Image 1 (cartoon, rainbow, N blue to C red):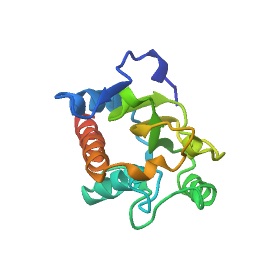
Image 2: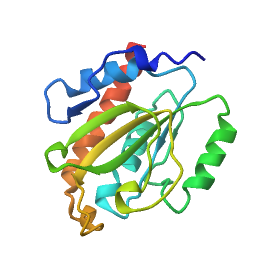
Image 3: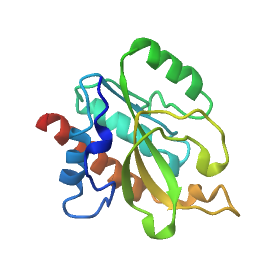
Length: 180
């Protein structure tokens, strides 16, 4: 498969509350999604700030998304099972084009922004974990600011923020696949 990802101009990040966030994100996804797309949603429902991935995975499955989705509230993919889960996913989809979805920490003025970029997600990086990268494309939602003094600050995030960001990401994926 030819990788044309780098040649498309796109807005790599947009705030989830921006009026045209869904169409812009869906266009970026549409231009990069391939027939063998597999969505891997990373995170856990045991921490609100880290639940973005499993919420997106659950919502996509509930909407009968046309591509395989892994990582839901029922079956999350997180730090403890990431290596084994990605190994099984790659066995099931050896030619898959993997799109990873995860929450992340960032600058305070970027909270609420959704980024789509070429390259893998580095799960756990924001809280000092070293895990293998996941995905050929990354969709990340910045849910809180980086706080080097308190790696557990992610526990103070409002569920409302995470839910609305998840809905925006899901709507963008759904629109992108209908446009394809």
